[in-house]
Length: 379
Image 1 (tube, rainbow, N blue to C red):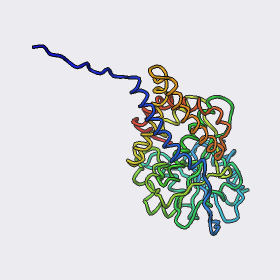
Image 2 (cartoon, rainbow, N blue to C red; image 1 turned 60 degrees about the horizontal axis):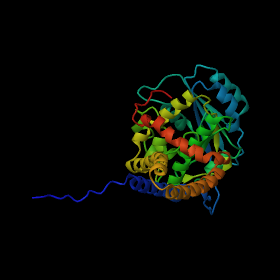
Image 3 (cartoon, rainbow, N blue to C red; image 1 turned 30 degrees about the horizontal axis):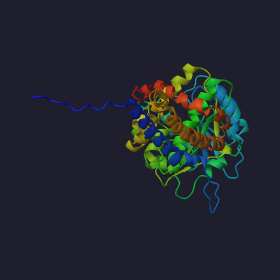
């Protein structure tokens, strides 16, 4: 008896690569169309009434004498028609911070200084000094920033508090970096913009998941009714993003996107310094809610695979079809990024956007291990 076998069809790897690339491109277009376009076409909500809430600006500092001398006057000379104070928590500094604050207090009566001389036991990071600052704050609306930050304008306090309505408990702002020469500065600023593009657009879509302590506001009552940082005191970081992740919702969170409402920090000047900073920041992502990790993870995976599959498609499939799919994303992405960068004051990065987008592949390789690494103590 003779047996005959039907010829087994050969696997067409070129088609598999192409259709996988097309599917990943479709997911990327969804993120740009559904989420990121909300930044590109952002318009502030029209209000029926304007309020100027009394505001407490809170800054925690440890050994930040130079930054306090350089940046604190920018917080103290804000043009604001209502009452505001600046509360600086000097957390066990060993430098000249105490004396700089004493001199500034002679000139600026709105400056309140809280001196901490003992470390908190079993509370890591800056959560304890920040909690003390919130407790000492006189006003309901809190506006947080860091000692190395300076407002982009004298209207920062006014613009950020204007994000509040009757139901608002959290207002998210953009914490950017100063523009400097060099490739590292562009990479730092693009990564910061890219992160803000995500958390601000998610909030506009009703899915807020984080904020940054360089430019973040919330109500004092929200802090105390949710027991502050009690559930995350064991984690060194997270006083900004994890607190927002825990307390923010569709109806209690607002976003302010305005050139006058930006804060700017001094960026790292060495690769090693930047790598340490970002690795520390990413250790908190594992604690996000499940839906946030899914959305962020899906975007991360598709962006990570996009350029390797693009290269493989050119090699193993008809380049004209691959180029067509690439062109669709390239044009749509460029349009959304141009309008978003213009809204957020980062338009000088736009001519570099293709290179910077490709760089993100290597960025993910470098920082992905931080998602599983044990957080470093201290702040």
